Amino acid sequence: MTRDSAIPSVTFARSSLPQIVVIAILLLLAPYAMTFHPAGGADATSTVRVLMVVVGLLAAIVNLSLFIVGVRRHYGTAHYLVTASAALAAFAIGWRCFPYWVAGVYQMDLGAAPWMDMDPKRLMPMIWIGELWRLGVLLLGLVTFVGAPILIGFSVRTAWLGGRSQLGYTIAFCAIAISFHFLFQHDYMGWIMD
Image (cartoon, rainbow, N blue to C red; front, side, top):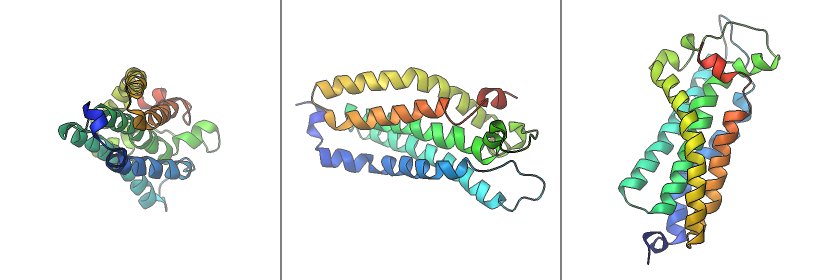
């Protein structure tokens, strides 16, 4: 009996539930985050903007932490695949996209808001954590484009060997991570490298 088959599907689902909830919250908040226009001097929505960015960053950190906890507790390959792909998805939405959307850069790039200088160095979260945020964004692209296909490949292999409970989650989370790198941003890399 393999370690993966020793974990009942109920335990597997329960251990992955927090990450599924975090991704669901991010997906529910995403359309609202995309509506923000660039802020001028006095901005009545600044508290909401800060809260949205904090939620996005914390969601990414929480999902990464849950992955690390799962690895330390040796839940098995199926769990690793789901939690790693959920962490990628949370980072793609919360760490990468939320600050871009909430700053109003997305609306400006769509032409729905007047052009403003949106230098990322003067915006959240660069003000809070500096280059750590930007480095995370840049590494995330590489990790996602290399890691997502590998996670999907291992997930298919694990499903073939009997661990089917994780296949749908892993593929869904990887698809979310990849799609949020291509969709919902016009010139993200040009903006972040400014």
